[in-house]
Image (cartoon, rainbow, N blue to C red; front, side):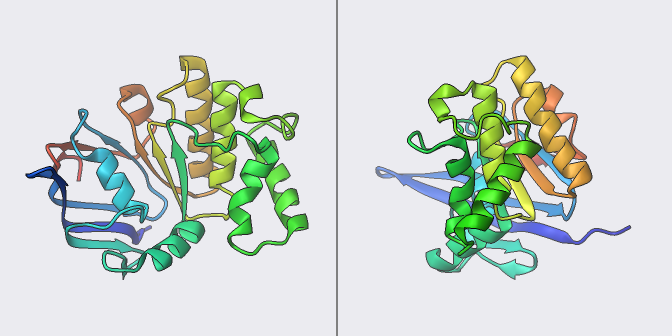
Length: 228
């Protein structure tokens, strides 16, 4: 079975101005992900892997080159249009969890659905179901500071699934967790890939986690050096 490319970066450069110096975080990178793939991105600190992740997730725009999402060039879209695409197409899981501290687990998961116009009854129902999916059905009314790191990351995964995105982007999702909690998180991501057919792109420095992926892409000095 042939899978279509869901993400494609073509000769992409990302340059930042740091004082009087230009820093090239990405240097003509070519990179693609097929629908239904689980891809791990690895590279040393400062290699450009997180920058590539931000471009894939419509969080940033390239300085030069093209970024395609489902065949559409997003590299010159307005911020408002990018925000709409992010809300519908992409779910994010970050190392720092990024939960809102004064909202319960249920409210954190339901929040993205507000911006897509989902009514309150449906938001609550779906948020509960997603928390059940990540085995936190008994923690729905707990606040982030009442949860362990692993539990907070599971809430973050449930939140990433709120609008049923096609793509899950995970940036060092186990970086702040112990090995047991980290294994639980990667098992959830792997299950989402196998059973829910989600496309997953994961930045990780952990070789053990990367082995779960279909393919490992290595980035160094802003270039793909192996795996594409």
